[in-house]
Length: 248
Image (cartoon, rainbow, N blue to C red; front, side, top):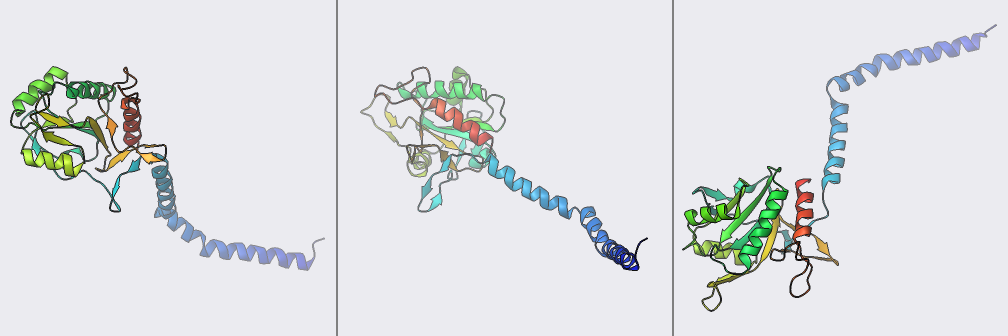
């Protein structure tokens, strides 16, 4: 037989449950109906997702600020004005070249064609090629050059325009050397390096032996393995890092 004390205990517990239901359950239902809980969970999951998508590629800093692609505006091989805004939301590679280059440019662009073909299914991948001989390299000349090398990526713009602006972009914007020089074969000299740019316009690169490489050697092909000085090719590394940025 149950004692009166037990009865009072059950009655007390029942009363507490009833009060809890009256006060708290409507609030919980209201939060769920207003997506408060699901929204907080979504934000938490989004932060975890964003963190997991971040690659190990570093930013290039200058005076404490991460370097971005400077503003530019030039004419491409189709006669259209192209600016840095056209590359927003895209991962892309930058080079400086000229169409009559007899030395490193053909090697650089064959490597870029190989990269283009590997990422042909990615709408958010592109290439920006700036001629350092704009007096000769008109849109028509660039168009013929693009057809010769089989440039098919719609985000690959071969650009020409004001010579001073192009040289400022190369030497001051990217610190990728370019200059006219009548004493060298072809009349111009320039770096054979590629710059890798992320979707937000920042220059990115991998770290090797504790130091950022900053740029990628665009001259030596994967098949060559090493250059004449024994340095390992960097096209395969560039491909790997493009994939990382596309996944960010």
